[in-house]
Length: 200
Image (cartoon, rainbow, N blue to C red; front, side, top):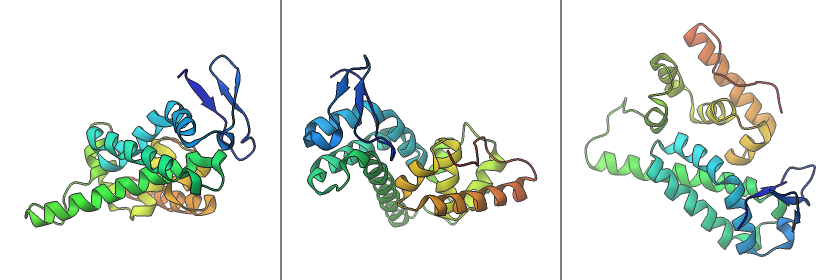
């Protein structure tokens, strides 16, 4: 299948175009298999970035993303707004990542390897890319604020994309991200991570 570009924004959900500009069927007018192929071609790398940041392991992230695409395929008939399926896909990735982290936590506890300040999955993913003080400050944030800051500013998703991924309203994302950034500035005594605070 040729590389496609899927227009799945709230403003234009009925235009899907291929790399050569040819018009392809909208997601709402194709079957589950064709829709997932389009979504996979367009969004796989973005979903891998999200999953890797959340679980901290590229191999596990691949499994998380594969499970998310399978979930979209199996649930295609129940997705109401099929042209906004990328939001469902984002949420599937985040939920699958959280599930993996919960299982990992249980395994570590049972193995007697967990302690109160164990390095988080975000640390594993970002440890070689961000300064230690910033990582420590991120670890101290509540989960919602940490996820909003990471997705919104580290991965540079829009407020709507972040809201879709976390199952929140855009206004809630803005609030969580704003509070998280304010706490980071207070702790670090300087600016926030790269990223735009203004809604895109």
